[in-house]
Length: 339
Image (cartoon, one colour):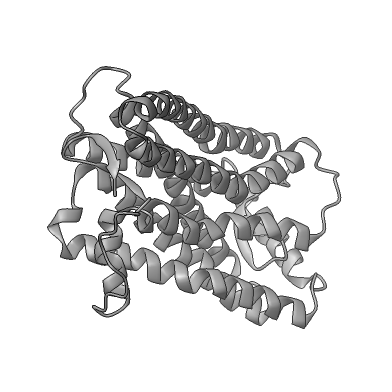
């Protein structure tokens, strides 16, 4: 009860302080967030809808892609839309209970999406590199991975609702997240555990999986360049470039947020301007736009159905071209081929 009263008091004090930004500054943040949130809702909703409409897309290897779209849509609908509204108003308007609910929802969807990125990396590594020999990736494996991503996120985002850690205003005070600033030993222990198991572990999994993929692609590239005249090798290297792009966007989206949180935990006295603290938050939320573009719309199988759906059935390009350079992993044959 004491912690709940303390949380309410700190929220009231934070809400009554002088605004950290001018009215124009809040409107600018609202517009920026709207630019990310609108496309994120449209793109991720499109992925979900076309997956329900077309049986061809409901392959085990695509389950993680659709799961990520669901999680990113949830992040955009909760964190994105509310950030647009609250920034337009210049303050967080939902009160202490609303702050806790928003912080929990955004964290749940965000960490689920992050875990799904790691899941996709592991799936691709097992399918392409076959470290355990030929493995048939079926519905059971796909469903298990999806369930694990939600369960892991739920396990680590529920504790603040029961006293281990808490959700609090962050940045310029228009959104809520786990409280990185509180020096209470219980809160610090939660934040350190949260950082290690919800950021560091997925990052290491992604790094290790894609590193193995890159090594495998480089070896195949040399072999195919000699045997097949370079055509298949070119397809392999396109996948390798996509892998590098995936890792870079992950780093851009999540590392600033995780690094800032860790800095605040280890040095609570550090002075960080609220606007500087808000930038990593927005970068993390921007991943809801990058993810469907990189993981799905660069996948020909999804693109074939998603783009015409967005264009109301119109097809503005020749679908099959000899010079096509994109690649995808075929679920049926578990091999990499030109898309």
